[in-house]
Amino acid sequence: MKKQIYILLSIVFITLGADRPEETNAKIKAIYIYNFTKYIEWPESYRQGNFVIGIIGSNNTLINELNKMATVKTVGNQHLEIKNISPTSDVGCHIIYLLSDNSMQLAEVMEKNKNKSTLIITDKAGLATKGAGINFVVQENKQKIELNKSNIERYKLKVASSLVELAIQVK
Image (tube, rainbow, N blue to C red):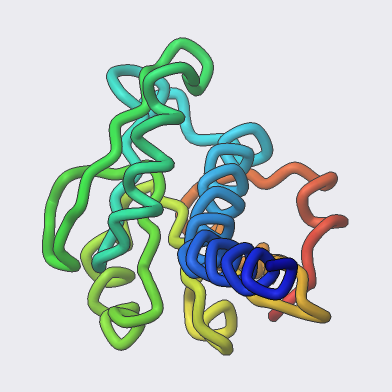
């Protein structure tokens, strides 16, 4: 009987844990993305209307987490608006998060937003050196960020020194 309970509990824990890494990772990234809004300063003209976060690629779990956050959080006096966009979209986002499956479109996203104040975030190795302002990386089983200050400043954004100190510096 004890053996059957042990097997049943093991199956339950394995089944419950099957979606957890993706959900946990999505929650962590959603929190990071929201917190970037506290450490990046956009020009005055970007402080009106909704604060738009565009996601390029498909990650329903992340989008759901960001949408949950959007119901209770604001950026200053701006409401959060989460949009799934294409690389050629002309939405006018404050933040664009380019998911790893779409990372080959970074140059296209950069070109489309070169005259805008948009923070470009990626999550594939090496993209902070190729134009992204912030890149998610995993080191020692922990979510970390790479930050390329010059890429952020290229878009007329100011980054707080406290965020620079927390990040892995990339040039």
